Image 1 (cartoon, rainbow, N blue to C red):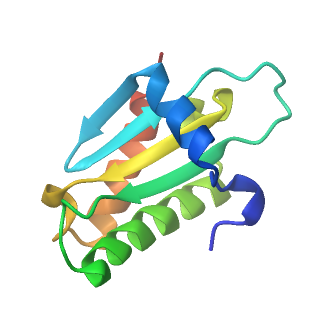
Image 2 (cartoon, rainbow, N blue to C red):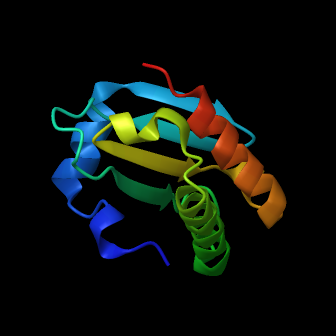
Length: 119
């Protein structure tokens, strides 16, 4: 599980990240990128969202969130997150296209999205 210090929790933090309007999309997963950090030692906060419009069953939505969260955690452990450390917050949004994908595909998608970030 992703430790508490990395989680994006407050509604105002989500809103501020969405307001920056920098996003990237790949294989049914989108990532919204927040502002650049002012202090390099601050941690990057991560949020994971799957809308109820994506699927009506909470089990399916939560599975996709778990897969994205675990993918990011493993990439963070390997120190393979690209330029993601330069930003204050990231939000991963799962779409309907990503619901049927397996873990390996989701992990590769998250990795590719992190490599794609260059605002």
